[in-house]
Image (cartoon, rainbow, N blue to C red; front, side, top):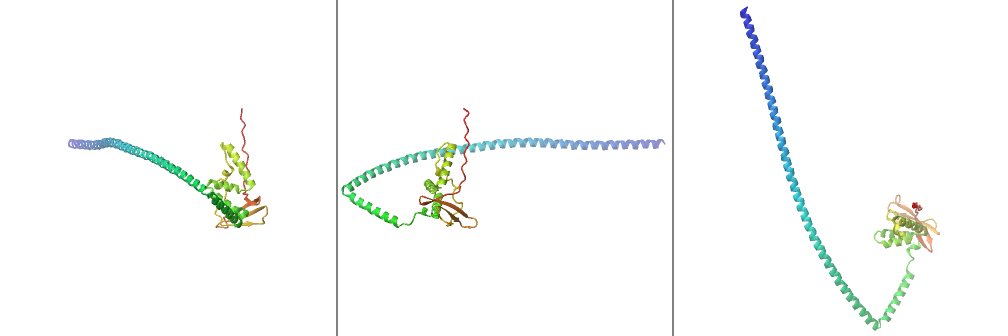
Length: 280
């Protein structure tokens, strides 16, 4: 019995030592893993700090390079501007010198021309000039008598002439006045009221022909054919057709004024602008 008890005790102690050894091994393994993880974290922290410092240095160097390039570009631009200013000043001086030379040549040419005219008049050119003017007047009278009637003698003619003047008014301001002269009395009165109202609102003088704004008057298509519709009396209507008759078609009303035809487009009535009374 004693021998068996001793064997059991030895076996128990061996099992305890084995468990203690296994526990120590597990603890050492966990400690090694923890140390390895801590080392990795420290390495990653140092690497992150190094990377951050490197990026900061690169950013500072890049900014300095950009600022240097910008300063150099500004200096080059200022140099070019200085050269351009010098060239402009030189060109102005040369232009004024040329203008002065042209004025001198023109003055000399005028003096020479007046001298020649005086010589011609003294030699009896007056009679020849008078005869030449008489011949020109006779030719002009004959040409006027043989020429055809003016464009505003018919409704379609005045519409065609008015459209040409409106198209030319974008390039020549005088064409707007001519187009305004081809309008009827009612339309001219309407534009006069509009010009007066615009002058009162804007604080400067507006002429009635300036109310013929581009896009609001005229046709939105190019006219191809024109024909008078219905009877012709004191008023007439002209049918204007474009390339596509189904879409591009308009009717223009015309009125006779002192033997000629004028355009009477349909314009809305002008509303009065309310005037505010001063408090004082």
